[in-house]
View 1 (cartoon, rainbow, N blue to C red):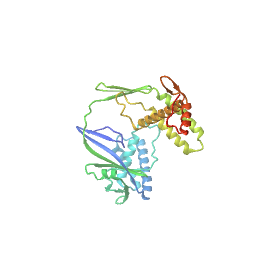
View 2 (view 1 turned 60 degrees about the horizontal axis):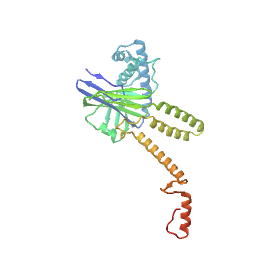
View 3 (view 1 turned 90 degrees about the horizontal axis):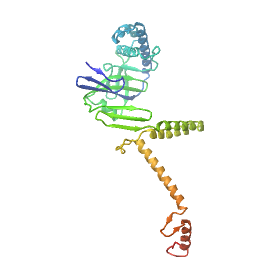
View 4 (view 1 turned 180 degrees about the vertical axis):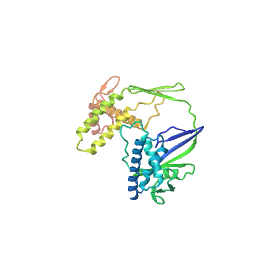
Length: 322
């Protein structure tokens, strides 16, 4: 008996005794074909018809829905696997207890099981009507080819939209035993993490609320000032959004100051640059005042500079401060 621990379309882990199956969906771009337009529309209508039958007949399982909807969906003249896939989609929508209205599929897509298609490198063959097929040329990089050419991966179902093809690949991997568990407590003013070994780390987030309010006022001001120039407003929104994100991110815990993210390092460099510029302004201001002090006298820098200039013009090699 296997227990599915994932959501459809995401990384999947199925536990069978001591083995673990990992499934990942990879997206491929493809060269669109005019033949797919009518196929998308027919499959969408089939799914909606199957949903209507499920709402009316209230089947107890997906296979019962297939028996109920098969005569109606067969009228579309498509391959039999499209009927099975449409009933699978319709039953998953019907079983969603969180829906508040009658479910209806608007976006066009196709879904087929691994027995319905054939994939030869980057050439995908899918059925349309009995004994008729459509061919799609996929666009893949070395990353995509590493999944297609790997003989240890098992190919699963595919989902086709107007822009991409998603193919599910699965593989048996060794189960990794966990060393412990981590519990995270998120509050408005702090975030605390504790593990089973007894280590507790706390992050201070008391300044997040103030930062959010401050940058909310900044975004409102940007919107008022740049309402006629979208290009400048988008650039300013991106700049101050990055600053808000970096400043809202809590710093590393004590002892882990070096383990900072890229955004935190950039923010630290930004603050360091501001500190250097502030220090340079202070030094410039001090240079115009009395800054050199000897044990027995205080020298005016401006007067000393003028004296040095005059003495340099008269050919003297040194300047004696008085």
